[in-house]
Length: 327
Image (cartoon, one colour):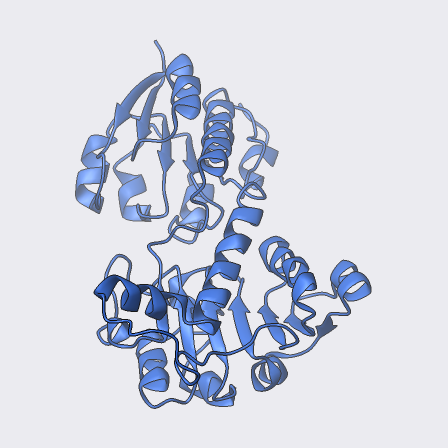
C-alpha cells in the first residue's frame, strides 16, 4: 500500500506531482486556518505531513498521529513545530532553506523604500482624487542613499539584504553570532552589539529566527534606543517585536515608522497598527514569487518523500533521528 500523505494546504503543481507519485495525498483546507483538533482528525492515519507555518504541530497533535514518520515544512522557520517532541518519537522534520533568500530580501527592501519615500501614502492620495498638484513642501520624505543600515541577524537573508544596499552607498552595521567576513570585506560592514546598532541605524531590518531568546527581541527598551528618525523593518518572524510597544513608539513619534510583512499574532493585527500612515503592512509575502514557491514545493516534497522511504531528508532539522541505529 502507498503511504498516506497529509497536505495541509495546496502547493504548486510541481510539488503535488511528486507527492502523488509517492503516496495517497489527503488535503486539508484550501485557505484559512486549520485548527489543531481538525488538523489531527484530517491527518489521521498519515505517514507523512507537509505543513506550512500556519499549522502548529504540538506534542498533543503528535500523540494522535502514531503512524507519522516525517513532517516537511513549507518554509524556512520551523518554530511552529515541536521538534524536540518529534525527535523523541523518531519523527523526522525538514524545512526549505536558501531557496527564498533573495525573494525575502527583496521584500525587506520594498518595505525600506516604501517607508522612507512614503510610497503607500502617495498611492492612497492619488487614488483618492484629492491631489492638487506639486508643492515644494508636500510629501517630504527620508533619503536612503548614505544612511546607515542595521541588519539584526546577518545569516543568509540578512547578508543578502546587506549586499543589496551596495547601490545605496549605505554604511552597514550588523549583529550575528559570528563575524561575516564576506560582507565585512566587500561592503565594509561592521559587527556590533544590538544597542550599538539600534542607536546608530537609520533603518533596522530584522533577520533572526524565532526562539525563546529572540521573542520580543525588540520591545519598549530597544525601541527607545532607536533614533526618532529611524524605521524598523520585519520580514522574519512577527513575535520578534512586541507589537504593542511598537504601536506606542509610532504613536508617540519615538521612531519614524515601520514596515512589516509578519505579525505577532497572524493573521490578526495588534490594535493601532493600521492607524498610522507611516506604517506599511504586507500580508506575509516574503517568499511570494511563483519561481520561489515552486522551488519550495519541490524541496518540501523531496524532503517528505525521503522520510517516507526511511532516509534522512536533504534539509533535515533533527538529524539525530536518522543517526540512531534502525532495527
